[in-house]
Image 1 (cartoon, one colour):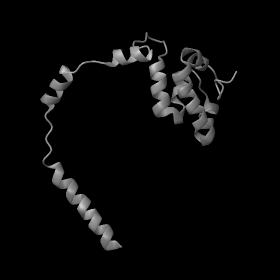
Image 2 (cartoon, rainbow, N blue to C red):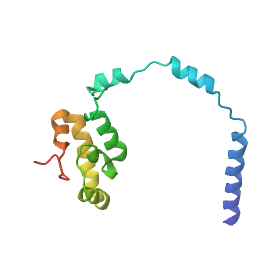
Image 3 (cartoon, rainbow, N blue to C red):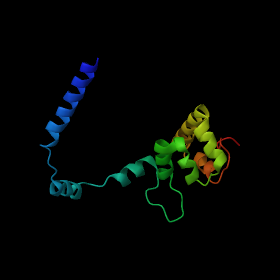
Length: 132
């Protein structure tokens, strides 16, 4: 077993060192490609009905959805909406099943129902914010 682990480690190490030396990054070509690219974010956001530009102090549905999708397990989307406190964080970190259910309802409720559902989260201290 030791020989097998050692052989795999040697193969992986040799492969990683052999390919790394031949890789060159051409930053001018990358910058030129970015400068020549077309900005499509406003088109996508207009099709989805999501506000692209947000004034200072105003909440963005796009930011909420990104936070809910990527950082929902830590309740960052709820803190963005004004819901805070240690109680909410304890729910999210200590009760995995309730956390998952709440996260899915938070994310998909806003996607499907839109503004009427999203407005329920503004400064709402409840864990199940969609529940009256």
